[in-house]
Length: 292
Image (cartoon, rainbow, N blue to C red; front, side):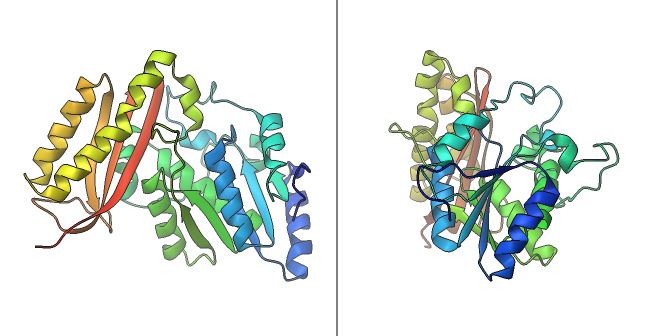
């Protein structure tokens, strides 16, 4: 485990990564993986802290994965801040940063690349607005699992659909990795921390603060069961628009990610995505609706 204030080791090639991890494996020391695209914030650092409590060694991957960006999205301008990320990780128990170039992960190119696809769910919610996004996510995460062979991997709950898809992939492919979800870390006004928040102007940032508040208001109405779920969701979309946000969707699903109908009961997840200027923001709420 790296000492606090000491920068973690930085590796870029899979062979070197495997060699380092094999030494830990030979010593019987558990390994945790925290996959990221870099531009680290307090939410990412909380993932590292959780990983360090669960494993002797922590690997953080930093890779802006082109497979998960749809045409016209922000692949080229996505912030790349490797040195700042290393500085931030120096205050954690991260042992190793794996920051490969694209050619190291995809040495034969992207054309015709074998992909990992979780059927149906990959094309709903965020997937309906970002074609191919989740195929890119599950493909690169599976690749990282193969390289690192972690005992556990830690993901934030802000992208709850992504977390669910990865758990499904691990279950279906019998991968020996425990998936750990960590609650979303938020700004003081409730906005979920995101690398894309830096795209927001001052005015856009002020408007974005309405997003978490309106999610909370929608949850309250759903729990009160004052109207069918679909009517509450439509009212929630109207409220987002009135707040100066551009909603892409506001969906309610149950614990198995099936769409909720009528006046649902039990555990549910409210999923939402909005566009604010050039920033696409996502958030969710996990809550229970009381049984009659």
